Image (spheres, rainbow, N blue to C red):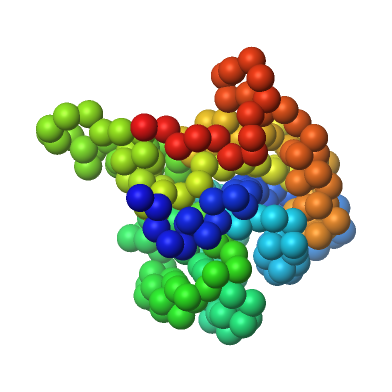
Length: 245
């Protein structure tokens, strides 16, 4: 049975965005890569505000992958500082706009205090009903799948797809991803939402993430609605696939 929260979003889109191009955007302007990431936070604000008007009920943003720890230490430190800033300064706006925040990914490797700040932000926004905002931090889709399988090791009987999905996503009855957008011209998934995005439509744009706005989101959603989704069948099916058992 669906949770009340996700039942309210059953007819709304789940969109995932790989927010790529912050560093290149900055370098092309003679700025530090950190300035590009700062500009990327502004793009997050624009897209979060615009998403509900485009019929988006769940928005999952790829902020920091598990592989991003390999980046230069100064850049990683800057990204973590931006995460602290976002958690400290955006909660009031999220609450005002009815946005429910959930951070997915590992928390045990984050710098001191960030995991606690995430918990406070999630608790403060828990009653939001306009948008389910999921931010992926220290996230790996393959690790999420592996961890779900490990939790089921030794369990009697095979799980249903829905039960396994609940373990992978960390949310009961989360809608599968309908559309994955990647900015900056790259065309790969980079270990993002591999399970829940199995039948997602893909939209690649040359626009760098700091330049991405409501108009770009509307363009991607419009392109999505003009595609025929068959889910392995011969005839186009309704927007939302039937739940897998």
